[in-house]
Amino acid sequence: MEIGYIRTPLGRSKIFRFGSGPREILIISGIHGNEHNSIATTRRLVVYLSKTHKNMFEGRITIIPVANPNAFKYKQRTSIIDGHDLNRVFPGDAERSATYRHAAAIWEIAQSVDYIVDLHTCGYCQPYILTLYKEYPEVKKFVEDLPPENMVESIGLQGQLFVEALKIGIKAAIIELPQDGLKLNDEIISSMSRKLLQSLINIEFLIGEKTKYNHKYFGTLVRHHADSSGIFTPKAKLGGYVGKGELLGRIGKILIKAKSGGKIISIIPKMFIIAGELIASIAPPVYPKEEHK
Ligand SMILES: [Zn+2]
Image 1: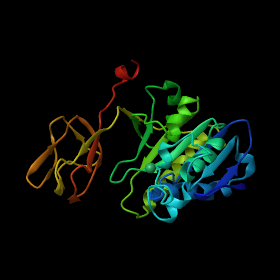
Image 2: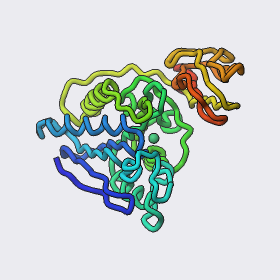
Image 3: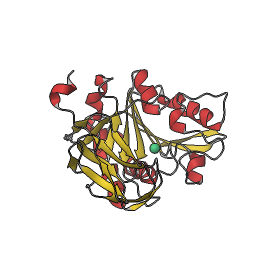
Image 4: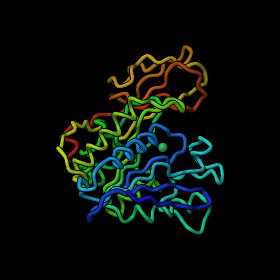
């Protein structure tokens, strides 16, 4: 294992490097500083890899667990230095503010790899992969070797690491994990770090027995934001399926109905909400016929 650092006014990001060979994968987390289950998952993966014998590696694995050190220090999504969202400013700019400079330093590493996995968290959600498998079908073979089973098409906002990487031919995706406040969830951290280790075997960066994941493909998420403030009471179940027009929950006496049929990928528990806040996301299923359009 080799250790390196990215140093900019945003702080210091530690880089762990394993293995050798012509192919390289970058596994990164903490682009948003308050997404702690994703950071804990990559840190666990670093522990597993540091215990792996060097003869077991078939490619180069680069891991950056805390991509946004300032945001992590203050337990915020973005840095308190310039407030920019690190996952909206790729490929970065060495001449601009701290977040842009850090993005440029990460991009320096990212632009030369073959694969990128960027771990994030999605609140009261089911884990899912986010990529642009419709726009870049060539990414499919790679993402099918990743956990979890839900595969969601992104809307492809520019400035995101995985979107900018896909544009230059790198196979890249986000993995979103549940996150309740700042609580660490041992079950998620343990299961996802083991599955990522298995993914490294599947894509032949580590020697071992390959397995297959059984993915379900979905279109872009249909988000439901609150029209009014009040107490939201959920009626639909996280991970369940709803038809269009079915009840998701209520805010006071106002019924919130599903704008689309599909799988409930996220839904908040009973809590106070302010108008405009995200209540639920539905992932509309994509059937095999549609996938090949
Ligand atoms: Zn994030």
